[in-house]
Image (cartoon, rainbow, N blue to C red; front, side):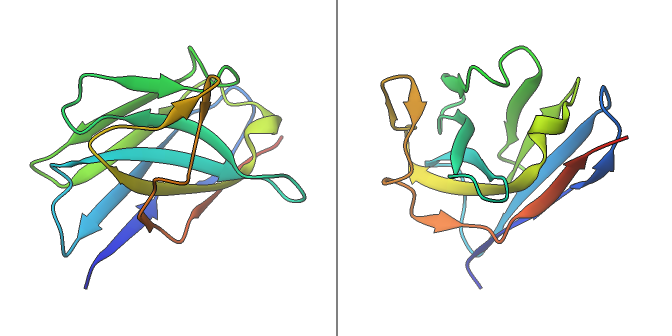
Length: 128
């Protein structure tokens, strides 16, 4: 079965850390850029981070730059999002998605129209 499965979400206090994982099954991630998007209640979906297929290009939204780190392990067919110094405004459902080779960034925003597969999401709640 071809799918993406996110994990690692949960409840964390402000200033804490979480590491999200996006595991692919049924296909190889080798030729795909992998992106993380998030959607908070009542808000539009936001592109958070993306890493190219060759691991030579990354994107971070201004809101997470310096706090989040994206990485990939093609041997494990998995992409990670390390989230540090978490803030309450990081609370959202986080989704991973795939796009061939490169991330589509326009006007400094990660675009989702090239994304071909999506996971079901994992909830991150930052609260004291």
